[in-house]
Length: 311
Length: 251
Image 1 (cartoon, rainbow over the protein chains, first blue to last red):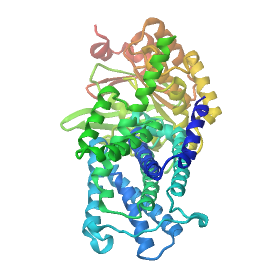
Image 2 (image 1 turned 30 degrees about the vertical axis):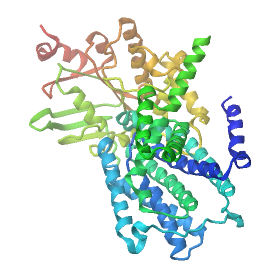
Image 3 (image 1 turned 120 degrees about the horizontal axis):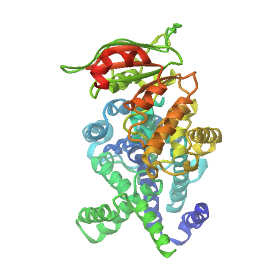
Image 4 (image 1 turned 180 degrees about the vertical axis):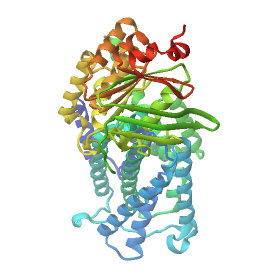
């Protein structure tokens, strides 16, 4: 049933460039990138109970590595992508060892601190990162010789990667390992008594989330052809976290909806209101008050209630 | 890891646990044979649960040693002890309340299997796990509730799910922390016969206050008071002992 309902949505997504203008296609591409990023953060926040305020580190570092390798050191996109994803995952492995010494607020503070260090480095190490000017003049890859320079071709590329990411993360959370992860979130002590290694489960998830964060970072830098230290800032981490929570953490659809909402608000509201951040804040306040568990669980609940009422 | 053969399933040697200046277990020593049914009794605050928490690895003792089948596990993490054949239930119900009964028991099964690391295959595809989980639920008489979330079922049923999770692991040593707490008379009888039916391959160590039921299940009894072993031995001898009356059973 669920899959039948998803078919028209899938068709709509695939055919979007045939009826939408470039502005909307580009907006959709950005939403896809933000969705992968939010989905990867949701592995930590929603399924692992590890609230991170430094997830932009993985997006930003993957983007910077790719930007530097291709623009400064003449690497091809394929090799640069492998190195940047591998490097990001390795960094997640290292950061995970540090951050997972704590849980809850302590974990949040460590992830925040680590991301602030990277953000500071990106700003200050101007010899490498070009500091506040960012790195401009980047190119997009040409997978199988196909150019991704048009809005539509990039969108399809992003859609394929997003579909793969969504599928992989959906399997991840429904797998035996995903069940272990949720168990460790809910009852860590019991899980240890049952034979599970809570620390290892969290650490592997941390690396996996870093990996997909890195994938979204690559798409991000391909899309913008430019990278700036703000991509590493706490604001980008916090925006994604807000999206995950507003959409519904611990669900697969929630982060996607939340990421779309943040981007749409940013793009539309900022055109009309200068202080669009205020509007964003009000919208989130509204969501948290009306649907404390997020939009997707909230709507599900509403649908169930309506169905029950009509019976 | 040196694995010695031992006459005992569980040995606790001079176990001491202090929280700051408060010593909760003083040099507790126990030796429990494979297949034995041991009851641990004592007034509130005697250190019974603290002893269990040290055996299961949730608490690290200040001094002393714990051996499972001759292997020193004092510094093993809780999950390593689980793989060594140790399983436990909790005095305060510790279940996954949003998940179904079947899923709860499945986690118990999964904990000891390498497939718990599997990331690319949905858990629902493991039909052998589901079958096994349902079989275990059947033995505790809860098969009809397998699809219901734990939050939906009654307290007495949750106690039995606690037991099912531990039994699913086919432990060599099973620690039961007040398995009868808060149960009605009917439920007590159910859980009692359930505990009585645990196979002899499993050594059972139980903390329980319901003396009528617990003494029927036990072969040997240890009486703790203020973190010390007061009396230890065959059931009837311990009950007859003057000190047991004084400390625990009352005049």
